[in-house]
Image 1: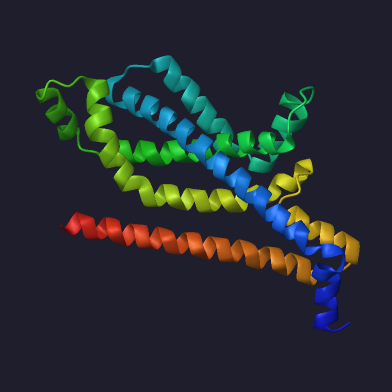
Image 2: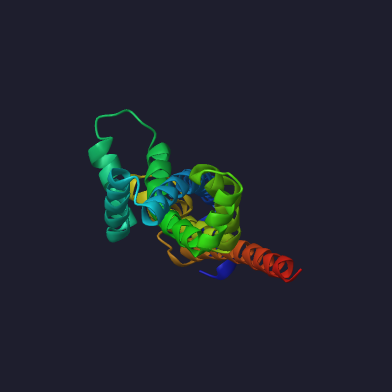
Length: 229
């Protein structure tokens, strides 16, 4: 079978290309909402942890955050996905896609938390003292002075975390979600041809990652240019 015939069999016949386009939509949906959950959760955990490290307050929340970080960063994301779907939501009528969003969001939140915490702790203590001298309390100083500086510092790293999350969603097929990777596998199972479907999936992921990486590079250059002003 030549390339053209193989291409037609894998993508044109029975509109099999729709498995890839529909899977891509699902992958982007899961990634987008997982990023939102991860960012929100990560910022909350980072603020709690940095508050404890700087002031000694919030001991119990800090212990819970450290437990969360240890468990999530110490176990594979696919195992977390399986536990959340087959154990936690085993008896709950819930969308598989929603389960994936929750699982990947919780996983990403742990890494976002450490990125943001590092940014917060990198802000000089003099900034806190300056806020206090202006009559701001700790919360106001964090919101008005520390967090904006920390966010600016860690923005490229957060963007890279989004890229990592995009690739990690490829394991969503373990709970029978028809994402991009699963779409390629469905085509392979129907045509008994693995090369073109899986190469197509790899190329689509590669294009998305290259585009996102380029955007991150542009962002880093603009931030560097602003710092020189």
